[in-house]
Image 1 (cartoon, rainbow, N blue to C red):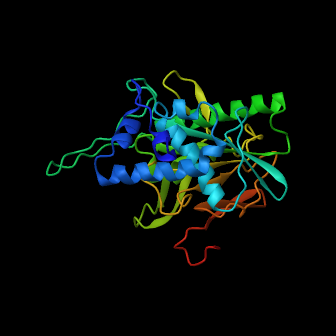
Image 2 (image 1 turned 60 degrees about the vertical axis):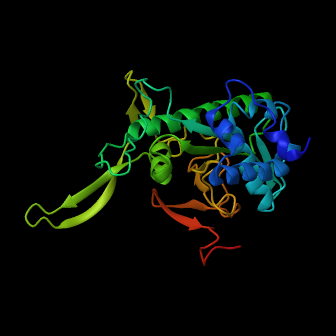
Length: 310
């Protein structure tokens, strides 16, 4: 059996629609997606756990994202390892271990109060439909995925699988959340740093716009009334997490260079702060503190950015 057929050999009942469609690959975008998966598998096969091929048909997007993240790092020159027990990916930077747990957030179970409703898609020629983007529900889904992985890292720390001086990263893919992928950066800011809606200051007399700002939000409410904090990278509540590596890609929608969709968000109160500029893929937020305030700017490592270091 060839490597190409190995990844898509199974045709089990209950497989995800994405897996079934890519496996059949009856038109060019899906043919390209299938070939892309086979290329990733060639890089990832030595790292795959024993259950990877068995779970791939049922967890297509999640398992694809593991392959994608590992392959992006390998092709960027990092030595990548994995094991059946422990986080998904391990690499090292300047002699320090870096662990990466991959997770693909979803919109939640359809019909539940805090789930994100699907986007309204109109047919060609139909009148446009205006809908409200459910910002808070998207944020709750991101926080749910981040909490899941933060708790997992806590267990790894207690069991000694990872060490307190390791860098612990969550690779968080947003593609499966309706409304999220076009505005991933904004939703990450809302979920990690408590950035709220845009506020405009105007002159009451002239109507002149005097300036704009963003609201500060410490928490948002679930349908049950429970409060969920949205400042985990400022208030110290997730000090063991070094940062979030955001991604908006999927198997059929991805950049030409693996990792150019990445956007890194550091934890400003991390026990082990992220040393910026070490994974030169996509973009990265870099913060500096002065006089009790944080100032952030985005560094770009995109291939088509003339200032990017290759």
